[in-house]
Image (cartoon, rainbow, N blue to C red):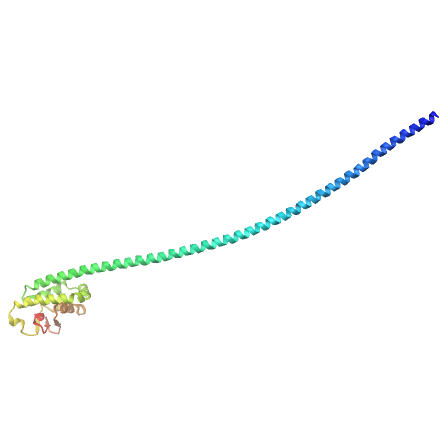
Length: 259
């Protein structure tokens, strides 16, 4: 009887131990399944999180790229507009500089031209003064001569002083000096002739002036007859140059001029 009880107790004890280990194993199996499921769920969540993060990252990168492209396009437009404005300003400045250069050049040319004109006028005035002084001295000297002495002196002065350049210059200013020189020549020569005999004044309308040689006659004529025109302008008489050797003929209806 006792043996049966002991056997029963031992059987219960063994059964309890077996149940305990089976329970532990079951719980371990369940725990492992739960852990495995949790790990898979964790991996899934992590993968989804990674995918979501990558998607958001791509979207953010795409948005950032689009924003950069947009900003770059706007910047390029603004930069292009600024460059165009700068180019227009440079063109205007260059045009203004060119206009200023042209105006400055024109002004310099004008000033140079005015300076040349002033110099030419000053030179001409000096030459006119010299001519006037020379003619005044000549007429003053003639005023104390007889008619024949005046003729000889005039011929000598023309031979000694009248040159090609002087003749050209006298021709240029003769329009301004003609009346003055003619009036003074009339007055001075008339005064000289009044001191001569009356028969010498009104003898004839033509006077023959003897010359020492034909070389002097050629000098009086001058190149292309310029000296003749000068003498005729200053005295108001006509010089007749013919084949008569060593002589020239003075012709004038006014005795004052002819003398």
